[in-house]
Image (cartoon, rainbow, N blue to C red):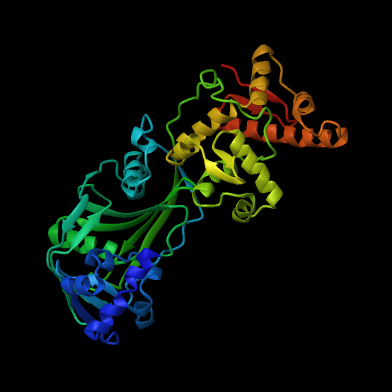
Length: 439
């Protein structure tokens, strides 16, 4: 709200300077913006999405462009581009790194994600190259260049500060990335964030072809989406077109998890899994809690569940140690906070560790270690039922307890199917019996 109120002070600037927003271009100085708004001009001019434009600008169809260190242009035209659709096909890409970089466990900045995509080989796959060196990074100032916004008069820019989230040089091209990170891709982005770096590289490095990429890392899905944009008419700011798009999921380096090492319980866990069969949804729950979906009703709406089903998933995440209930609301535990900053592979490893501390899961694995044959679904039902009879307050309602036992046994099977894919140490047969894969 503070940010929105600050931007709305553009209305005071327009009124004080008697600007005519019907004109193709109006000019204001940084000093005028500072004096009238009482705000930092750079923050006032930093509007990276169309829906964040002040209402007075939205109605007039104008946007703000910096054109020098001391001057802004308020231009009529299309300053923003609607983000093209994310490709529905997700390409699984095995990382070419021998390990997961330690920095990926701390923070989720745009530059970190782009650098990981580059070092893993994903970006090289897009461009058909294995050799890319670091290019520009952080702040630069543009040389002088001129352009139009649609049919506007010529606009000249000189010494405007721009930022590179990441840039790579493959010997022929300078590949610039403007990155975003979040749980939902932005609807629009500021064309300037691609156009000004494009002109910077075109003017400064004539022996390299400038390439512009818009990048989005989806924290919920663990996917990396890239859109390549071109400016067919380099002198027209509005002439932006999509040249290609991709969505990847980077698979972590293959390293079998040491089951025995992580079997030790970190803390007390629920003895049997709650009725939440989809591990991916349990993994998403800490992210939703971090966004404010911290109760059963809100979680049900976010997942598209009935409240009762959301209740089960909340209890499952709680029993696995990622959240805890306080006054009817979920809050992240330290484990849950750490989980948010992990790469997709790291999240799967952490989830595996948590599952393997659940007493019933440990009991099944221990039985697999003691015997050569499989643990059958009937045996799992019996184990669940014994646990329910010991701990459930409903043990006197035998029929209901048996029904619950069967449902929870189904959850055990669902969790082992996930462990089968993740650890490659278990196999769930069609008859729901579980075996241990041995060397």
